[in-house]
Length: 297
Image 1 (tube, helix red, strand yellow):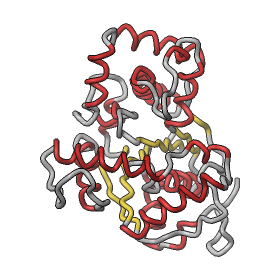
Image 2 (cartoon, one colour):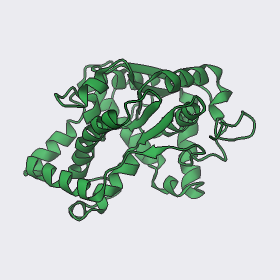
Image 3 (tube, rainbow, N blue to C red):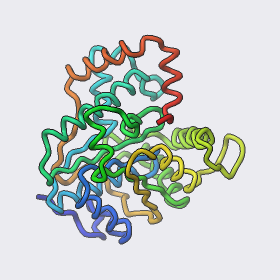
Image 4 (cartoon, rainbow, N blue to C red):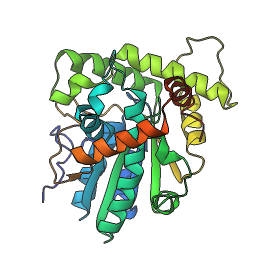
C-alpha cells in the first residue's frame, strides 16, 4: 500500500500544507461511505478528490472513483454516442442525460457489491450544465437511500478570491505545459468565467442575493457556496473553505499514487442507456429546455 508523502517533497499529499483542510478531508476519508465533491471546474474539485483518495488508502479504505471525465467518453465513443458528438467542447444533452441515469444505477450496484465498511466511493459532481445533477435530485429508486443517508456527504470546496485567481492562472499554464494528458481537456480560463456567469444566473433564478448587477459579476465565494448549497438542499452537505494555495506545481490531480477502482460503464451498457434516453427524449427542443433548467432539483 502506498503511503502519502509528507509535505515539502511536492508528493501526493500536498493538502498537509493546510492543517484545517487536511483534518476535514482526513475525517471524510475515514468516516464516510460516499463522498461527492461538488462544484464548478476551477474550484479545486479534482485536487480534493485526489487528496481524499490518498488519505483514504492510508486509513485502510478501498477507494472507488466515479468521475465525469472517466464515464462520459464511454458513452461518446459507443455506436449510439457517435450520433451525438462534442461541439465546441460541449457534451451533447443526450449524453449528459445518459451519464446521469447510468450514475444512479451504478451507485446502487456498487452499494450492493461493496457493502463492507472498508469500501469508500469518491465522486465528482460538477452539476453545472446538467452534469450529474441527477445525484442531487430525490428520485424514488435504489440509489436514493444511499444518497440521502448521513454516510453520504457532498463536499463543496469554496476557494477564496486568491485561490480562485491562482486556479485560473494554473489552468492557463497547464494548458500550455500539461503534466498529464487529461489536463489538455480541462476547461480553459475563459470557459471557467463563462460557467461562473451561468451560475450567477442560477443564483438569481433561485432567489439568492447577488451583490452586483449585470452579467459580468466577479467571482464571489459567498454566492458560490450558497448556490451549491441550494442545489444540494436534499443532501447532507459540507462546505469547505479553501484559503491556501497548495504546492501543486509538479503534481497532476489525475495521477494517483494509490490503488483505486474506477466506476465506469461497459460499452454495451452505455449503448443501452443511450437508447433508453433517446426514447425518453424524442423532442430535441424539449430536451434543450430541460438541460437549460438543470438547476431545478
